Length: 451
Image 1 (spheres, rainbow, N blue to C red):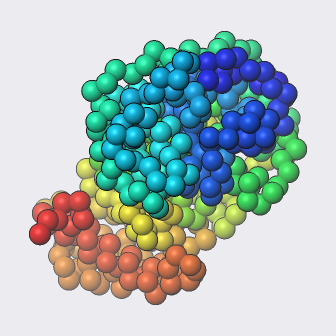
Image 2: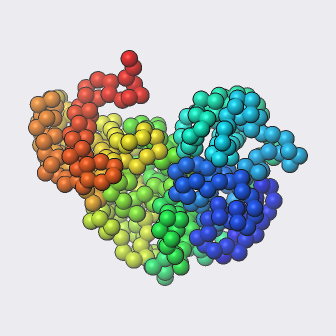
Image 3: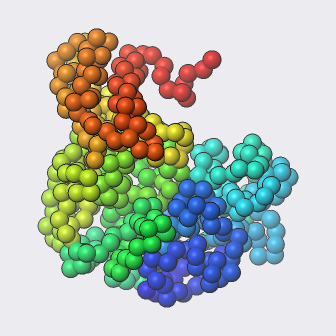
């Protein structure tokens, strides 16, 4: 597969294996070894690079980024963050001045993340750096360095313009092209952000003989905010979704802020998180609680269904061979929605339990309830018995306590390395109590409660 992109300001053309990662190519073919291999699964940030396309620069993990995803884009590794004459970038100088590095293994990834954020004008350094792990220096001097660099202008050499390239069968430019190709190649793997598929290659060592990349399909990246609904195209990244959700669904947005890391959110797509059918994906519980509508397409045929009906059993979804998820539509307003992510680490961790509640109370009585969980069954699943125990009942602690006892009727969770079955059930019960407390004016978030 022919791939053309800019690398540290110079055009490169690569005859690429479709599932060769940028990290491997940089280190093995270009001897650019500043980009480090740590976890090789998108968790540690040691391999962070800056990638620029028509929507601007973003930080991405090179270890789970396939070369064809770079077609028509610009890449800067740590070697290209200093100037052509060796002049240090402001964040590099600040890291030196503030003693932000010890062993240095993680430093190139920090520099790439910080330089990208600096170019974007961002100052939310804790969020920016949550996906870069440091076990030597600690974050305080690194964050001080990021703050110190804020006022410095971004160097001109960082402002790459992505090259113009032609589309290819495996990198279609439109949904029409993709749908026709996928209908004719139903056994192929569709790759959007590769935050999941990338691990199939790097960890499971799978061969993917037929692959198509969705990142150039402009009509799959559209967000439409209407009078009553919001539509997300399947290839909308979680970073792009987060910007919209912050305005209309702040609790959902706060959960998304903890969804992976900056680098993962910049790659992961809302459609990919749905289509893979993971029982611990964080989006489906929120979408089910919102009563979202899922959109699918096979060739020229389209269909819609409630997203709750999409998940049939573990590893099985209501999607036919050659049929793809094209987007999802949610209500624009849902003031009663609350989303809770419970994980061992606050940031950048897989949920042990993710619970989303959308309960309407009118005149002190529950008039409707949609409750959905991930991590509690083989699929994301509604809590039908709990909902039934709430509807038409007074919104009181007594009602909540009785309804919470029904979680064991709705779910039979498993025990694994993240949590025991008993813990998961107890957490589900506690989250319903938390929802009641929060919606009746009590402070419940660890971000709000102060000594």
